[in-house]
Length: 130
View 1 (spheres, rainbow, N blue to C red):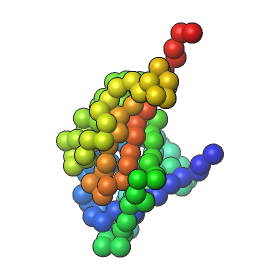
View 2: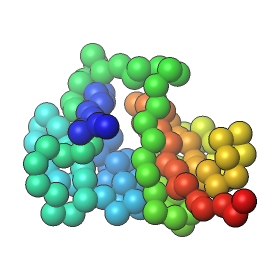
View 3: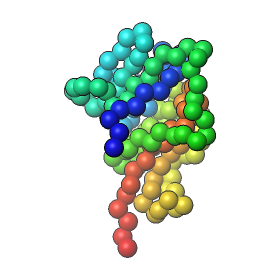
């Protein structure tokens, strides 16, 4: 449904350190960077990067509680690694890794706030026997 998304950050270098580490846990790499942006996606990706952070400086604002961005993970280990890396690089816990029964029994996710306060989720949808 979506082609790409960009979010504004107050401090591009600080945010890049966070996203370099957290997204590496999901297999994503830094595809490009300049003083205005840092872009991420799968190694070798060509075209508009799926995810980018944009230098917003003092004008950068998070959308608030009504918005969160969920990244797909391949397995629980990737969810756990994302969470650990996020916490080690300036993230704030918003829900540790675990099954979220309120969604479904195969919904394994973690929730963090990035250094700018963006609400992030990383999730794997596991197959559950009926």
